[in-house]
Image 1 (cartoon, one colour):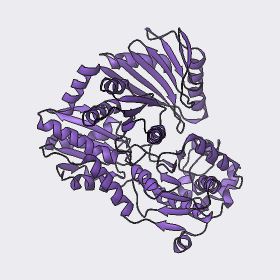
Image 2 (cartoon, one colour):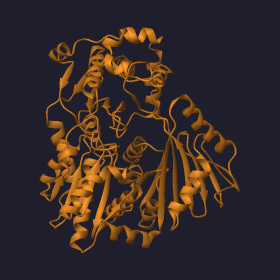
Image 3 (spheres, one colour):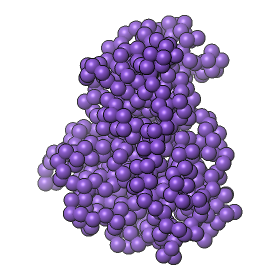
Image 4 (spheres, helix red, strand yellow):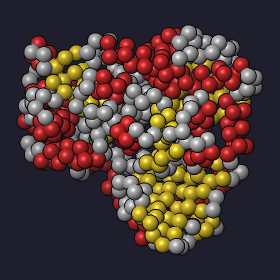
Length: 546
């Protein structure tokens, strides 16, 4: 479809003419350079006019594809939809709800923003056949996205994603997808607006998981980074009788522009700047930030005026270590992603806990939990990814900052009563299990030339595996695209679904290369037992990307 045809539908696209006319030539070229791809369980992109942007028509297209998939699945399918605080999230929610309900799908929606874990829980609680979350997680403000969930509350499995994608790709007339007015669908009961019962049930599950936070003099600073975790996180903390927290008020209001931060991502140290300034005045011990849809969480510890920023691997190790010490059983199991530090595996195995590795993406952790439940072979205790995603209670099937915030506060409170900090605890873990250090590099290459550059890097390292990297001998290469692990002794099969990931092992750790499926990015993960992670990782990064 031509640019002219799209422009003739501008006034009905949700995109303002003023915003469209401000687009740069390069941005417009990208808007019409292809179609937004429905990847594994969802779609994410910039908001704007054109087939490579999110607007009323591309959102309706996804909804119609989902409706066809569900109608093939069963006669009386049910879907629940939630949305975050981003630009057009409520509008996209309504568009999806209208298309689904018009096509015979019983649709449930909320009348205000909610977190991603609440959506995951809602799917399970309502016994829905699918869930839709309107969010782009911690992407920049110009992005939004649609994540689709299966009946287990985890993101849609690969087979389902392929079918939805096939239906979406078959839609030819994107401008004439039928949808009845929302008011009419609400009146007929085809769209139902949910009350607070589901969220009360979710909060109750969180309270049962945490049980209590011991009384201590621990002080906490909390920020939602303009996202969905306020009011729910403060409500949960107060229900647990923990009131020793201050909110970064300016960041705890919904703001689709994320005005107070360069990046609304707890992985970014700068996202904590306002919290750090508050902590200096109040001498708070622990600083906590969640991302806009509250599935990820980051922490900073203040020890005698020195601020210690924890990465996702360290937070995961702290949580895993604590949960292992506070659970029993011979069949306990934890799950982590293939790009998460080996430290978790060592902690688990030395404590008689089985650690499973899965592909990146929490849906693979959800699938493992379902497998444990069906076979009854293992008792799930914890799952996590290095990208600040953690889940202890399996009443949801996606990463869940709402349950982890009170859990990390509980751990810190217990340590404070012992005269310790979480920094002390982390050092004890290193001393016991090994000084694993990690570094992550994320490179963005915009446009078609950027896509080609990312592909060239992957092709080069896939087809010409290096013998050594910055002087470290490569002893094993794992290529998850062809599911093969190669050593000097031969080739073994990797028993995981195909994914565009390359992993190179050395005597003291590994590195991994992984392009994003939804953004023009490629990530380099470095995980080594070393004292100078910054020097070595910078050299590796330079060798690969320069």
